[in-house]
Amino acid sequence: MSFVEYSEVVQEDDVVIVFLGHDAMMPVHVRSGAQTQTRYGAIRHSSDLIGRRFGSKVTCSKGGWVYVLHPTPELWTLNLPHRTQILYSTDIATITLMLDLKPGAVVCESGTGSGSLSHAILRTIAPTGHLHTVEFHTERAQKAREEFGRHRVGHLVTVRNQDVCRQGFGVEGVADAVFLDIPSPWEAIQHAKAAIKRQGGRVCSFSPCIEQVQQTCAALVASGLQELLTLEVLLRVHDVRSVTLPLPDFGPEDDQHTHTHTQPAPGNALVTVKTATPPREMAGHTGYLTFATKVRE
Ligand SMILES: C[S@@+](CC[C@H](N)C(=O)[O-])C[C@H]1O[C@@H](n2cnc3c(N)ncnc32)[C@H](O)[C@@H]1O
Image (tube, rainbow, N blue to C red; front, top):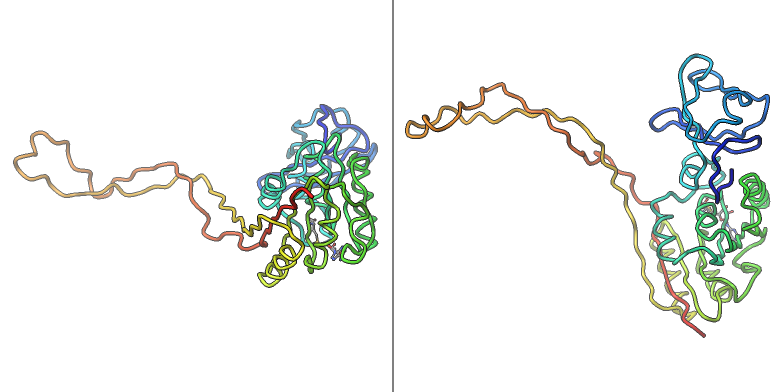
């Protein structure tokens, strides 16, 4: 198992995602002899996980069952231990597209936070790219390093424990793209520009407040970056439901048509149809995404 390569079978020391039902999953670190308790009873790692194919249905000790899934960045985002606020897959998908990330790309990121975005970047830039991620909180930086190692992506990422606004990304002239998710991104724009290749590249900054966006845009313009664009992406998930509606009763037909028409529907007739219903409540604002381009020097 690796977060950037698919394996067929679960092995000792893998991280797997145990799927318990709609909206219920948990990450499990597989170790021989260990057990994991679920609402359906215990999963015994040696007999229930090790050697089983990813995607298998596993019966727990109380008779209920779960599915064992191969980890992906999207599943990890929904299951990771939160050390900070994180980015979710809707924003991450837009960032990946708009930063033009692809295999072989070199990316700079700050802060690492809980590594939600980092895992998605790593999957996209593998097997030949590199992520330089900067986190000034020492414990968070160390936890991220440990996680990248456990997820077998450590060779694709360098975690630096420093202040990106003062010390930058620790590399210059190498990046295809830079991403910022910090409270004062405008203080890091000069470092972002310096990190990008001479041939040019892309920048993105994520901020919850419009005042942060204004200051960031001013700094981007002052640094000579171009093609500024700020956008927000909102997700609408639809439920599939069977909806039962009354058939309209238009009353008796008038005389000249009665002989050709079928009988009107009786007053209590119902029809059931499958529909996709939009959410009553929707996840609201996460943040504004501001993009810019550093053109060739
Ligand atoms: C909201 S979190 C990032 C979440 C991350 N994008 C994810 O998806 O998991 C912001 C992180 O930036 C770090 N940070 C804030 N200012 C920083 C700075 N000047 N230099 C380095 N890291 C910084 C914080 O410690 C925090 O861990």
